[in-house]
Image 1 (cartoon, rainbow, N blue to C red):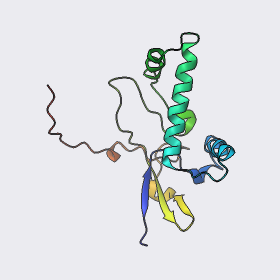
Image 2: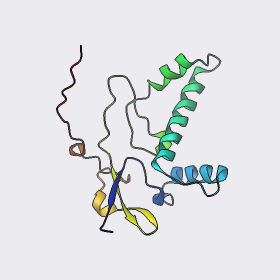
Image 3: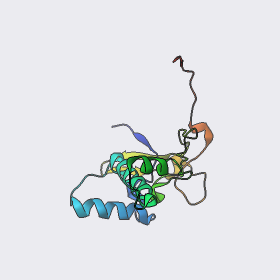
Image 4: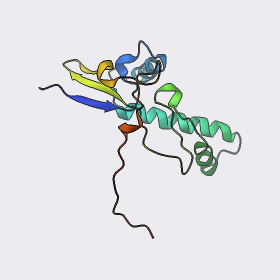
Amino acid sequence: FPPSYVQFNAIPFDLANKYPVVQQLIDIVHGAVPNGKLTTFTLSSMSAWLLWAVSAKACGSNLTVSCVLQNAQTQSAWDAGGLYPKQDLRPGHINASPCIAMVKLTTNGFAYDQQLTNPTSGDAPFNCDPENVKHVKTYIQTS
């Protein structure tokens, strides 16, 4: 196959030795399903579960769907414990994140490509150039 790349919006699994939160996620998944596959869905699911848990905890004894949803919408720097770049979840603030990590398909799976990613923010493995997000004209009319 020719060189093939995929854009990740979370810390790639092969960086678990550098980012303990990723290793913790891997340990949780493999503790439940020893040979469980790790995918972007795994990352999204963990983020959703953590958001629910944090939001539910904030409700205390008033645990209702409404309370959980309201608390989830107060997160202005959600990163799922460090798995993702910070994202503002407040209504009216949700936008596509410009932060990406490029991974290359290898015979052993996907591997983070630091040179192609060209990280922009210190120690994090992401390129967060605002130019990573392109805005296109929409033809949807709202009433």
